[in-house]
Amino acid sequence: EAQVTQNPRYLITVTGKKLTVTCSQNMNHEYMSWYRQDPGLGLRQIYYSMNVEVTDKGDVPEGYKVSRKEKRNFPLILESPSPNQTSLYFCASSREGARFGNTEAFFGQGTRLTVV
Amino acid sequence: GEDVEQSLFLSVREGDSSVINCTYTDSSSTYLYWYKQEPGAGLQLLTYIFSNMDMKQDQRLTVLLNKKDKHLSLRIADTQTGDSAIYFCAESMGEAGNEKLTFGTGTRLTIIP
Image 1 (cartoon, chains in turn cyan, purple):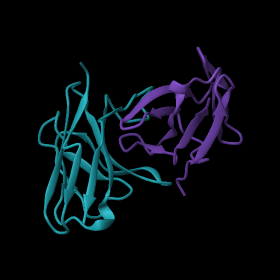
Image 2 (image 1 turned 180 degrees about the vertical axis):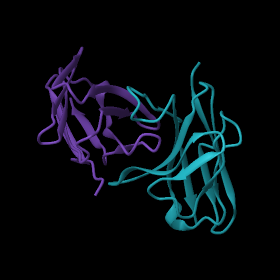
Image 3 (image 1 turned 90 degrees about the vertical axis):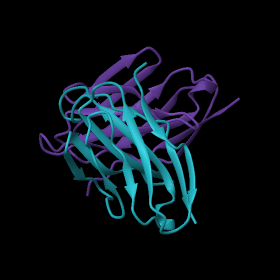
């Protein structure tokens, strides 16, 4: 079954304690991205990756890091989480970048992060 | 700015039609999308429209595109309780090799029995 898998689904952590949210896709997609969803703000892109070892900042990258060592995995790293990073996070993958034809983005189930 | 705007809430009686509106900013967007987010789940592509089209119909869904006004709408005929969700419009933006999807704020559709 084609899917994007995020872990964990829920996480409560304390300010400053490093954490990683994993994302894996089994569709051999080149393009992967991370979004955060906040009430009234929709989805905002944090980072994206066009391919292995190619990553770039989205609209709200501050406080986050990513890596793309393998095609299937795209972890999101919070080196020193703060309360303003409390949010619902989604990983997404697609066959290629959004502009190349009808490129459906497949989303993970989401990770609800609370930083206290 | 790169804003895609939607109303936050819409309530519709079961059996009526729902119309969700969206305005976007990038006139060069090639494709425009509607995604559906059910409670506790990620987003799923509902439908899309190519920018040289005015309308697309897919069963109960009708997408209308007014490129001059940069206005996109999604009409759901005979709205059912299973249509309760948040609906996001999205446009593709950016130069080739650096493109991304920009999402609206989402419209929460509530069905009244």
